[in-house]
Image (cartoon, rainbow, N blue to C red; front, side, top):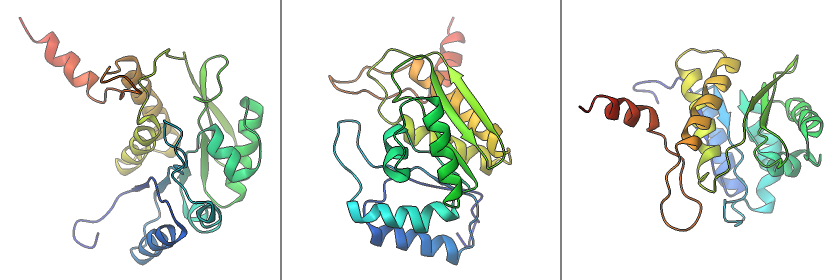
Length: 204
C-alpha cells in the first residue's frame, strides 16, 4: 500500500472481531478512506460465516469508516434489527446503516422474492432505486462479492458512488443473465460474458 498506493478497498468475509479490528487498524494506518464493506454473514448454502461476537465489531468499528456498505436483506436485518421484507423496510434499514456512520448504504433486494430485483441506494440525503427484471436461475454464487468489488472498481476509477453502484448493478445483472452451469449446486455468474461475446462475434 505504501508502494503503488490504494484507490479503493473492498472487504468481504471477516469472520471474527479480531480479524475485523486488524483490518480496521490497517485501514487507519494507511489512511484509506474509500472502503466498500460487504458484510458477508451467511454462505449461499446456508452456512454461517460470521461469529456472533463479530457482529458488534462490524457495527461499531468497520461500518462507521465505510464509504459504502452493501448488505443483502438478511444481513441488513441482522445488523439493523429491521426485518427487511420489502422496499420500504429496506429503505428503513439503509437509513439505520447511514446513522451507524457509513456514508452510503446499498441494501440489495435479491432476497426479496416478489417482483423485480431492486437495490436501495441511500447516501444520507436521498434514495435511488436500482431495479432490474429478476433472473430465474440458481447460478448466483458470488453475486454479492462481485457487486461490492465492481463498486470498488468504479470508485477506484474516479466514478461517483452512485455511478459506481449503477455500473456494478448492470455488470452483475449481465453476469447473472449469462450464468455458468457448473456442477449440481449454485453455479457461478459469468464475469467474462462481455469479453466472450466479443470474441465469439469475431469468429468467422
